[in-house]
Amino acid sequence: MATQKKAKKKSSSGSDPKSKGIVKRKMATVMDEYKHGKLESGQSKKRVKNRKQAIAIGLSEARRAGADIPSDPNTKSKTKKSAAKKKSSK
Image (cartoon, rainbow, N blue to C red):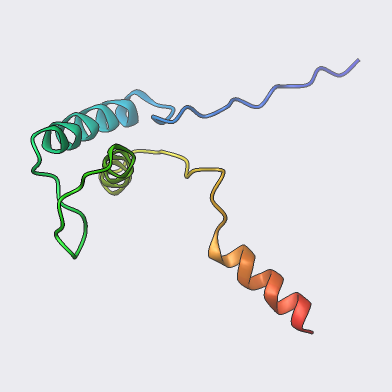
């Protein structure tokens, strides 16, 4: 009988210790800024008032710093939508 390997599920903080350290540091600084009212969003430079937005900013910064974090599986990518549109229009 052939044995099947179970696919390892990636954690939200990345799989290797380096990624986990990057995520931990970035999230600590971002959440500290959020708590003290100093966290600003992208180009508009508006103060972030939503906790979920602060978490998203922290994960985004960690990804840019080199952490291996998978994207949210619940969000749909634009490429899939545009490919579906092209198929249906033909």
